Image (cartoon, helix red, strand yellow):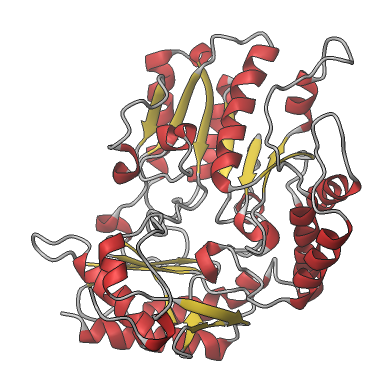
Length: 443
């Protein structure tokens, strides 16, 4: 292992088993961050690193927001925790009301979780329990999509479609099918915005209905935009077609907006940007600007009311988390929503979209670039894989960018970027300049 630098002398890297990380590779040359402000991290050696990924798709308002820190400090000093099982406190009620002012029309009930993974498993359980509540108890089958990412709970990896997230865990949920993914390099490479071709892939849902019978299918879950798989966009008309098919057959449609929620694609939610309202939306990440773990699931009033039957003293839904509606997380979320509203951040990605697209697509002719994809303030550069070494080129660009001052993400040989919504044009220029330089230097 490489000798530690002075800033690492008292730091043991061995005990922490890092998530979604090649631990041995990382610990041989660690990328360690020490502080953050605005658009930048500072690493343990004092180097500034531009945040080209909003942390992990979550710090939409940038870093070091004093309003959030003050709200958290004030709340934790006055009440650090309060249960929401058969008890309550004002903050989650206030937060739910604020959130329903932003959500698509009709999605006006909110169930709080602590992460995107929990939001997904909650949504799946709501879907199954709802079908039973309305007398459709045979509807137990769930449908996800290839290359989908829905967190790491057993429900999420069952409906998810990223192979490495699934293959080591054999005991997945039964009765799950998958739609085909919508990545089509042959027909859609280098499209700016939503790709033209691929709406027909939604018809695979009709085939699954024919195969299993609509009376056996509870819900379909998709990301409006598949972020973790490498910014895979919905073809024009695709989401609307899914909505039409699910509505026709009485199947619930769930949008996983853990990444796209809270302004990433140019509207509060992708459902609004692309004018398709599902029955359930899962969120997390940008809800608190990444400051405190928290998630929220939005459901329609009709779904909620289906549970509100029977004796008034009976628990309607046997599900929840110790930290559902946690007071400190709720305080962080309320402060975050204030920032979004004051600074117009929930629609700012739409304002920057054209400029961002031009910057990204200016890299079209760089070595090994086989596709570029973008929407809102999200972008992906798809690199050709080296023969016999898939993912190696993408990792080298990711690592090289960090040491030259920019943090991006890589999924195999796909480079993904989602800069904070506070970014100015010169910030985007700087980010793309670094990425371009490193791609040119990588064989």
